[in-house]
Image (cartoon, rainbow over all chains, first blue to last red; front, side):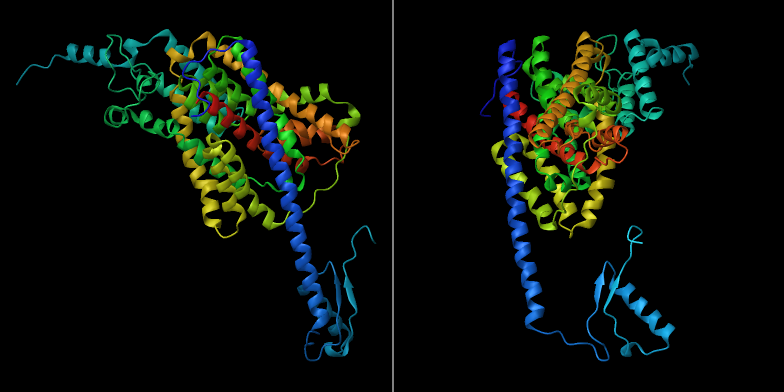
Length: 116
Length: 404
């Protein structure tokens, strides 16, 4: 090995100090390099993800999605899953005794405890 | 039919039993082993390893199972033979496989560095580097908390230890059991028992060791600092990270490749999302099996001839100092970062940089909560905590490069 010192090496205290200083600086340097790498990695990944997201959001604008038969426009969901939204719509249609395709839902939003 | 001499049979049975050859040192070691078993079982001090280590120590020190008998002959019934491993010459694995005891065979995994590396695969599979990736500055805290390793190195040299033993004692400050074993089995195998016991005992004592140091080095205002929420880390970052760390660090310090390579391999199994079965095995079955073998075979190295020395006390004392300096290094770096960021970093999270995942992070969190009940530092402390694992592995690589 490059730095091999041999077996049962005895050191003086100043030598030990120097060795400790070099060792500590190396650990700091390696982890600082890794820190720099993580910053670079997150910058690149986030940039690619932003680009991907903007392409995804631009796509529906150019190609209008086909609406399901009987649906009445789009609905905006805030913190509500599709499954929950479907259930809410079904309950309301049942309560009003009105077919679902004759109702217009603009948005469904979850009201949190703080907003009450 | 020949006559049966009952007296002679009983006499031979007595002579062959351990009770006829018991030495006071063995009694001391049995008491020490039982003390460690008590700490592991009743006080839950790192029980998964300490119970195994203590039992290995008990087995190797039982009268009748010692390596050399009173008449100077080698005991064929000994479970562990120090002479095979610590005589300083080339290790004769053929002789070990032919005539070695059970613990000699198990110790091959320690000596070849297989067990610590396999454990690191499991540790990697259980580690979430997300908090560190979300806050890369925590790498610096993880590095600063390796201060204890180097302070202990200087002190061990001042106490007259050789460079190899000093490096093995110093690595206790990394608060990382497998890393300590990996370094010691290479540099000072005869001290493996005491160093492993010291490392695991102090890791279990972190909730007692760290808080007073944290309080002394920080102000009440600093301890109450609330930190901003961490950003979400993408899957891609988590997958690229282990691959890149392996390449960057192993190329720079090849001696660190076995440990860091295994740690990162385990983490990749967890994060890539297509090897769930392997990740599960690494975290559970593999980890448990290796822990079992590692504990008992490391304990077997603590025979009374190598353990009952004044050096043991010095090593135990230096290990404690290493832990204290490491904690101080992390907290002081945390203070510096707090000052640079104008109070955005709580210095307590620096103490978590001593590895010992997740115990040290939990201690930082609990300490922060004591002073500000609304403060949740756990995820912030996990960053330096996992960075500390990388830091101690790099420090181990440096020590092995110098002394190995």
